[in-house]
Amino acid sequence: MFCRNQTARATIARGSALEMEIRRGKFRQSVFMETPQDSDIQKKIDYEIRMREGACKLLAACSQRDQALEASKSLLTCNARIMAYMSELQRMKEAQVMQRVARRSSDAGPMDDRSPCKGKVAISDLRIPLMWKDTDYFKNKGELHRCAVFCLLQLGGEIFDTDMVMVDRTLTDICFDNTIVFNEAGPGFELRVELYSCCSEEDYSAGSTPRKLASKLSSSLGRSAGKKMRAALEPGACSATSNGGGATILLPVPSVQGPKYHLLAHTTLSLSHVQDSFRTHDLTITGNEECSYWLPLYGGVCCRLAAQPHCMTQQMMSGCLRVKLGGEPQGWTNVYGVLKGTNLFCYHQKEDMEAKVEPVLTIGINKETRIRAAEKDPHSKAQNICITNQYGGEEVTHTLAADSREDTQRWMEAFWQQFFDMSQWRQCCDDLMKIELPSPRKPAIVTPKQGSLYHEMVAPASGEGLLLQDNAVSAEIRALLSSYYNDSY
Image (cartoon, rainbow, N blue to C red; front, side, top):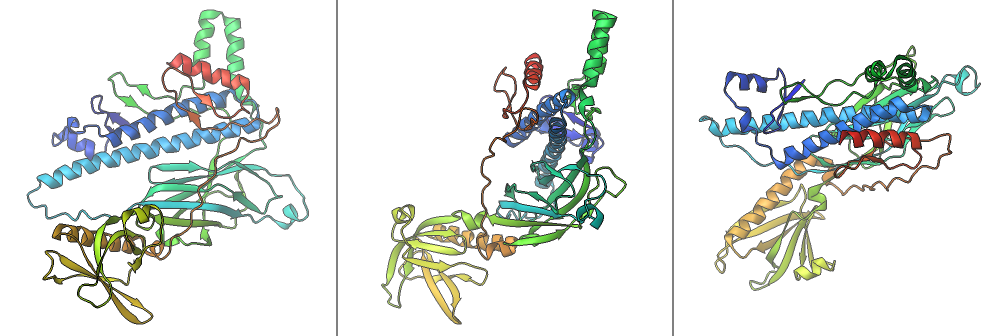
């Protein structure tokens, strides 16, 4: 359960240590002033709540199997995102309190504010091998057991889902072609991969039974009694409700008739699993052969997990420098330096860098590089920067100079930060891994009898209803969703 302060809109877990401190009077909820980041997360929560309401409505109205499976998948994804955003908001609020406590504490020592850079983490080419019995696969005997499966992937507060795949004994692998990219991952990330399965052999047309039953009862019992009966049987009452005191509480999603997905297997991937190649990772299987959603998994998942730290793809420092070329005392050349990845690129001028002209000099900055501030140059007011690398067993030192002592300090700080980022991201900084961005989804080609229910919707800008971005959705469901949201606003 969560409680929300009406003024600051701070979401706090009931029974948490933070709430106990507030009750003891050590903290006041008024200190939780809403920051722009808090507001963004709150908007995401509100958006997913509306998506969940729509998914409940759609699931109750679905009369075809494929539509019901997609609607149930959307409902599960929305719930997961809401819980992830709630946890992220709770973590941010507790961090704010801890910062205030650290500042006020008299015995608090100096705090090291150096933190590693963020980066992109991409997972692609998901393959989950199956292990069918000989009688099932080769001899084609027994019932054709079919399941709808998809993967849910979570890294921090970001959650993505793959496409739904129908699996039976004619397949030897469950293949997901999605490329999923997390843009704000830290080196200590934990990417949880969950495989959900649902038996597709049951008849899901019963999802619309309560609505039909309510309609018949309302006509038989009269307008007043029928209206109460329809409200009692309404399956979409899964929105956030008020507890009477102005605070909003997220109630559990009620049971809605239709297909139910179950967690079949899961695994957690971290920085140690990142490699610029296709690898196999162990799966933890939670189901068994007695479950209707069971599939014979080998116990592993194959995928490509790549990472691109920002220190490898972005300019971490740039500015004017002087570099000493040759052994002559006057052999200094003015350059424009750019620190990016494992190199310091030196251009004649800034315009050469913007025009992507080849640099006049490239100095390696890697884990083996040694950098020090040299003795003060008698002809300059700033210290020199000496960068030493090993090339073919021979030490090569490049000497740089900035315009002022402050500029020298900024460059030295940028170098130390670069080394720190490399030490945290480890193998991801040896070479730049390739990440192919996912291409936009194309609308699926379906027959009028099939239909699909793409769960991603567009939030209304003002009083407009939500519109589904899939032409395959039936007119009946469009009308239901449009009327529901128009009534809500």
